Image (tube, rainbow, N blue to C red; front, side, top):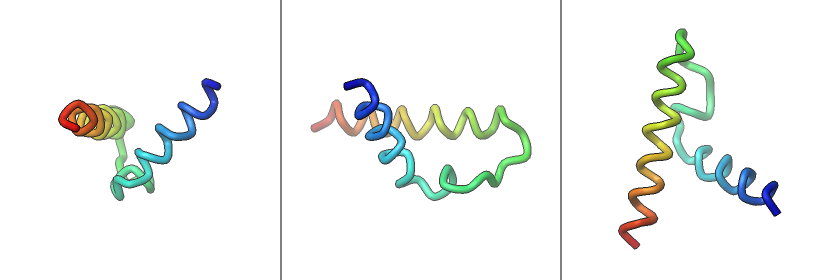
Amino acid sequence: PKRWIVERTFGWLNRFRRLSKDYEVYSEVSEAMIYGSLLRLMVRRLAI
């Protein structure tokens, strides 16, 4: 089910310390951090 996919993705994002807490003042910076970490996860999965 789709819910498992979303929960698994959130689990992967919890590995990144900076995303586990809201340190950023601007939402754009937080969004960029999420995109960067998702990109890193996708590249790592492609390399395997």
